[in-house]
Length: 141
Image (cartoon, rainbow, N blue to C red; front, side):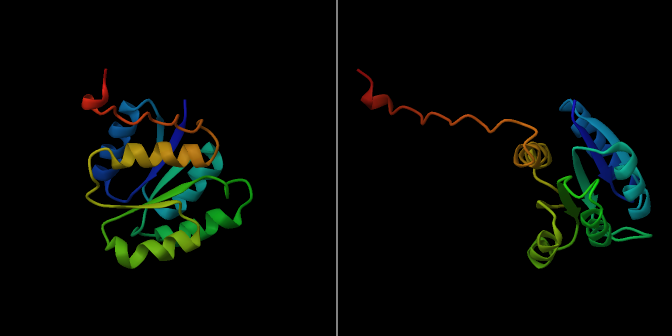
């Protein structure tokens, strides 16, 4: 069972993401600010981190920079989650080391797909098998 660390200062967002991910079979651990996020990442060694951008104590980008400095947790894929304008911030957090940027409110299926994608690129899930193109009904014998 893969473990996901959900970090957000809003308890409602933490609960929503936790329920969503638990429903997909993930074990979820949570943190409510940047300092807790670092402590929990060190202690729990999650497979993926969903990190809110705007939080008290330390912002998401500050946490991300610290994660990338610590060899024991630097390889954990981080998906930044924010209510800010993704076009403005996405490039900056990706340059800091985030794997993806999810804008609140997220689209149905976006969080689940993003977590699976992060696990795949981290080598924890096998690649998706190629999909067969649909057959053209008129080409059937």
